Image (cartoon, rainbow, N blue to C red; front, side, top):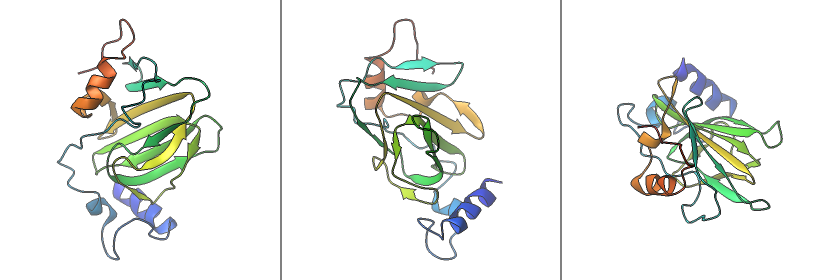
Length: 170
């Protein structure tokens, strides 16, 4: 099903970012048995992000930024953009497949600068946020704890900003 979806997206985007002619888009994304290590979806030098909130009911991390500040949002790892929806202001989202097993979703974006079929590299700016950013990880069709996938630097950033009483998943 995923292979069909990605193939359809690549054809719809006229092959943009889907590898060289004849390459299977799923194969282009890399080995599905390797678990990707994810970056924070924004620079960890941003001190103005408020405390990180992890909600087990939603399996995501959420950050709130200071008002009137635009934060560049980057791809957490190399992958293929399979969804990019900016039809609802302030509720835009992007879904990136990193391999056939793992994808990420970045929600509540103010602007999006990629489209389905685009290949992205880790850290590449894919949009921006002005108030709140939500970060989800999906593994084999189930939402899972993002904390287990992120770099040690990202864990430190999150640990220093956890809301009182909120414990990151493990």
